[in-house]
Structures are given as structure tokens and as C-alpha cells.
Amino acid sequence: MPGAGSTGSAGIGAVAPAGDPYRVYLDALTSAESRRTMRGCLDRIARIISGDEEATGSGQPWHLLRYEHTVRIRTILTEQGWSPAYVNKHLVALRRVMREAWRLGQMDADDYQRAADLPTLRHTRLPAGQHVPPEVVGAALAACDDDDSPAGVRDGALLAVLYSTGCRRAEVAALSLADYDVAARSLRVRGKRDKERLVYLTAEAVARTEAWLAVRGRAPGALFSPINKAGRLRAPSGRPAPMTGQAIADIVTRRLAAAGASRRTPHDFRRTFIGELLDAGVDLATTQALVGHASPVTTARYDRRPENRRREAVDRLQMPAARPLRPGAS
Image (cartoon, rainbow, N blue to C red; front, side):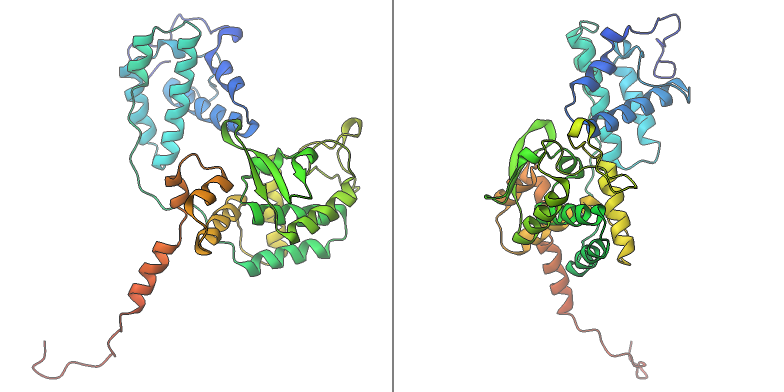
């Protein structure tokens, strides 16, 4: 890897695919969205430190990285002007691919531990995104109802599920019909690191989901499926195919635009769900369990109540009336 340090990669053959830590690491990820994200991180690192705009992480000599190289990589990433959270995501990918090189016997334990001993960038940032007001959700649902095609019914159910569960877009995309329990009003969700949890639907969300299933049918397969221009579900061998997380994001954008609302993302629905629960007095532990956060600290970052209290404190101030100073006053 030229540019990472003095060793470089000149004269070093590409790592064989079967022993490529890049491929092994990506194969170990359970989520397609995680694979896309981490592949992008490693490919960007490979391009930055090699100077080759066409480079990918595949076949790179990750096993030759040492502490002096990874420290330099961290500095280069920081100098890109990216947010600390974005840089830290790349550092996670870098550590993990080196761990796979160690597991494959390509690095010894001391070299791996030293190279991976990189401090993350410290930062305190408000969660990205914005609140989705109830009137915006209502307008988007109305836009779906005005569309009498199968896509209108599907999208109405999809928005209702996002709003009433706070699920990540990849989690919704991965839902199957078998995950839906109408009697319990629940969905079985597989989150990050393949952790399962149950989330619950409001009565209105159940009604919209049932309306969608009347269109979709009860064949095993994905709960939400792509629909072609002819209004037919994509269902190879009669089994509804899954959507991608990006397709769900595109639906949110399209339906909000049709409602005349500003752009929001599926994560904005998640942010709103957490904020609404905490505003309603639901305890932090329950909220954390519903949204699948590994730490209550992450859930607490979405708590709007401290911000509301600070706003109320400022509202107690009274701005003095505008009037000129009397002579002699200062």
C-alpha cells in the first residue's frame, strides 16, 4: 500500500481471494447494507493510501500494515474534512480487516494489536436528521391513499410501519411475512449483529399492513416487495422478493414530495419515534429495547426533553423594549 508507510506494496503479489481478509470480513457481515457500507470504507482507504483512484480493498496487502502505517492512515482520513463519526466508521473497517488478516494467520498477534490500537476521534454531535411532524406523516399517507395502484397501498403500509416502530430501513427491507404476527400486532426484527427483537404496530399500522397483504397475498417471502410499472410484484417462483434499504429511502422521499413536504429520511422516522416515546414518559430502557440500541447512551442522544427544558428556560427571559438611552445613561 504505497503512501501508508515505508514498506509499501511494490513487488508484493495480490492476496489470493480465498485468503483475502477484505473478502472474508465482508462475507462475515450479516447485513447487505453493512457490507455495502464497509466495502465503501475499505475501498476509500485503499484509494487514499495507494493514490490509485480505481483501487479497491480487494487483494490489498492489509497484513503488512503496522502501527506507523495505521496512525498515518488515521491522519489522512482526518484531513479529508469528514465528520468524526464518518472517520471513526472507516477506522472500524480498518481494524476489522486487520483482525481478519490475523485470524487468517497472515499477521502475528503483536503486530495486529499494535496496528489496531488506534484511538477513535472524540466528538459530541447532535443526532443527524430532523423531526417528522404528525401532519407531515398524515399528508404522506394521504398521498399514498390517493394512489390507487398496488404501490400506493404498499407505501402507505411501509410508512405506517416506519412511523410506529422506528425500525431502520435495512430492518424493514429484511422483514418477511413470517415475521408478522397480526394477533400480537408485532414484527420480529433482525437488527445489527443479527440481534432479534419484537416491535409493535399501532392499530392503524396493522390496518394498513392488512390492506397491503390483501394485495400482496400470503405467499412466503418478503413482507414488502418491489412492484414493476405494470403493478405486479416481483416474485420469482411465486415468492415475493425483498426490497433494498435504498428503495425504502426512495419511497419516503417520493411520497413526502408528493405531499408537498420537505425531504426526510427513514432515519428521521426513527429519530421521531424515539423522541415521541421519551416525550410520552416511556422509560429509557424500554425505548432502547424497542429500537435495538446496544447502549442506552445512544438512545439518550435522541431525547428531546433536555432541549425542551432549555428552550423553556430561555422563554422565561423578557426582552427589554427598544427605546433610546436617556442622556447620561450608559
